[in-house]
Length: 207
Image (tube, rainbow, N blue to C red; front, side, top):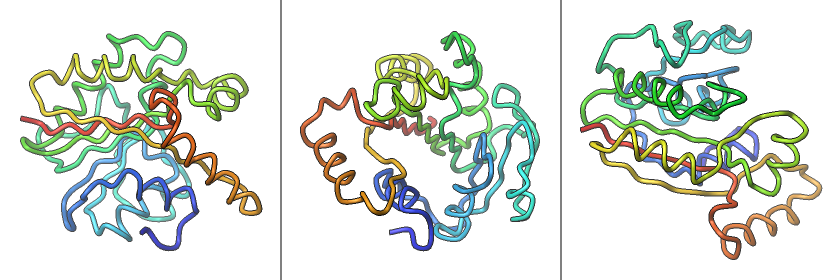
């Protein structure tokens, strides 16, 4: 279990359950404020590089290696990362239209910078999750991808690679109501159809 981070981050990485190997090189595309970066560096002991369209002040304070650039034109050489990690970025590529063509252009960049036999981890919030839809989609205007669209786009582009999918529930909850939200999570993960779970994850091994 990841220690010393918010409950959401603990839950998120536990449920992601990806076997990151110490000392490997990871690219965090759309790294934002570096919250995930701290987990990669402090907990998994990875060699971290972040990229985004802007340098967040918190990431700057942390002093991690950063390359300014967009997901569809990464400022990096081919075949250099063991892991390429993308968390809640794809739905921002074409914020209103969710164009499969534009998303595919970004996927090609992720694959380009990943080493042969390296792994690409793509995580996207699910549009029709009962918590995400009213809060993130309707109130905040995030045009999250549906699970079916996510699976279709990933399978279509990475058709020559090894692709696995997983789906899970993880959110940031108020501490005083944690028991009730954990009960909600249990119901979602054990009773609800998986098409409503909060996160869609694709793990691709590049051939």
